[in-house]
Length: 232
Length: 232
Image (cartoon, rainbow over all chains, first blue to last red; front, side, top):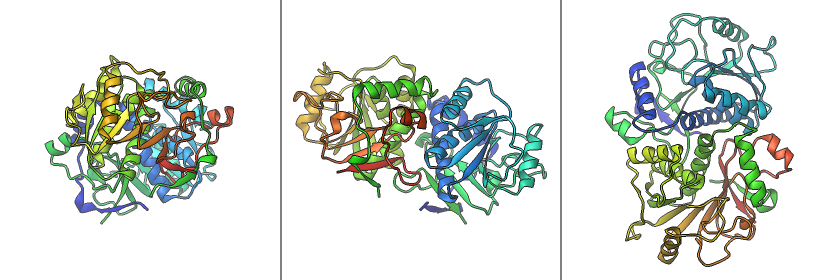
């Protein structure tokens, strides 16, 4: 159902390049965060719907753009027949994040600040806590949340970067998420180089100019698809 | 490739309800125009890629949100391997529309104010001039553009409403676009009730609350798809 590409056919990018691409998209290329976040969250939801059966799903959202992707993902998951609940431990003052909360709440997607005391009703957790700009170590309340999630043994699907990982070096301590599956956005980051679990790629919006400037190896998406799966 | 649903399984909505749904999405439900425009434009591009071979395509964009959908559609069409050019006769002062122009121009999608004197290099025209809030008659420069497009005999794909049509009564004069195919957004409008040509539907983002409030018959999208095709 999802087209498979080889790991050898795409660039794995470092922290500096990821930040540069992000910055250029919103300056030189004139994109709005809302636009690309919508595509990122949609791609994440599509990968989840391709990989897991419909279920309750707890979506952990951080205060930054990775968390925003999580909110958007939750909205689309609901459209796809999943039953999402959002855990949003640290509220952002950002106007877009406030809108995302309203969108979810008015769509009957609960938004809570703490993990439910019993995680058993959730066969799946989506990790949208930290993205590529995160620098370890984690702090509370996140350290505690990661620990609880880790100890629950529940399948975790991470958006872009498994939370707690360094974008280049990966997991540098045990104080991180050990996901079951990951979707990389735009291009996989260095920390995913040795990853052998299920690995999706989405974010089909990089302009040709950026591709050429950095000689990026972009994935070959078939037809009008928004996600592919990366294998060896 | 695209899932087919029966016309009998979806609501056809009038001008008042279409306007009300639109208004509620951006107030009560907290959506940003950028978000829904991205999904609408993506769905339009997906329908085009599902229905036509890759080619040069002239995308006619009006100054309102229907035109914005056209800009987004053009960007995604380029990602899908089409070669879009935008015709944007009446520049909007709207800040989002300005960003959409920048996004296309920096992606090497030409943005011009007039139709090319020779339309032959374009086997396909996307009509994103007017949406559901348009009231006939058209005015110049649009009257002349519609005439040129009509006389060219080139296949036209309309986004949401064929330009010049009344949202409920359809074509009330000859001074309109006669499309080859149409994508309706969120739900088809009354003017599409007797349409027998290729008919796609996209815009999978209506919250349950709005569906229930108006007892809307929403399309059954399969899996994580963003478009379906409507047949008798």
